Length: 138
Image (cartoon, rainbow, N blue to C red; front, top):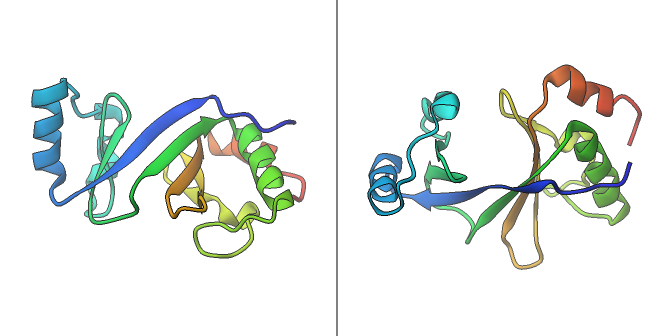
């Protein structure tokens, strides 16, 4: 399978207070919290996700983090593609199946562009679909 991005999934915005930022984005742009993703905001480190693809994190971070959506098989194809390019994941190790981060309903691989911006490739498929796509060795 050839790797393909389906669309931009979300942008991480790093703010001092997720709640204050959520109020601002609602008042100014009409973006409201996404109820289906509210469980991610329960912990101090998780995002408060707004409709429109804005993920508010209460911390400092890279200049920007972009998340691009693909399918479970597309995530496997991305890992193969990135490994062939010799790219490293966010931990500094080579990209491979161990680079996948499980977000309880989403699976991501993180890397940086040459300018220090974080890039995330994300799939939202049930684990069995993702596992099927990763069954063979990369």
